[in-house]
Length: 145
Image 1 (tube, rainbow, N blue to C red):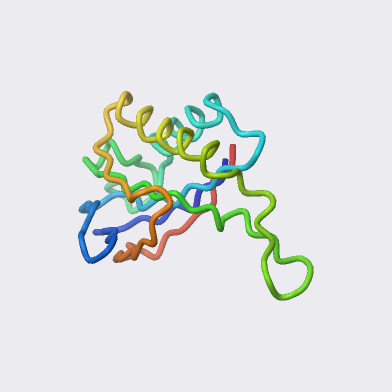
Image 2 (cartoon, rainbow, N blue to C red):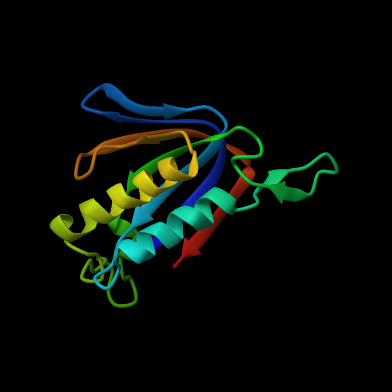
């Protein structure tokens, strides 16, 4: 699995004019699934997201995780994270897992985060989503399992 993680002061996702997920300070996480990912990959990604130290401590050092700051996570499925642009000008999506395989794994990431104690908002799998966020920092990292 692959995730692009942005530290945010707020973020939301809208589908068909309706806000379906919104958070305050925390992490906006775009999650991509590839063919060989499984439930273990999903749980590993969730654990990594929950413990990723991207927030400043009292000394200004990035040493706190989202739980330590009382933050939230907005998790959004994003098959385009596996777009291959090495050849030509149109990305190939062959590395992205198909929806019936990917959807339950993204759901497992969310479920595991919630089991760990996280407050999680989500987008809507397969929908055309508009994501709005205020990047805090900016701090953006790529996480892979």
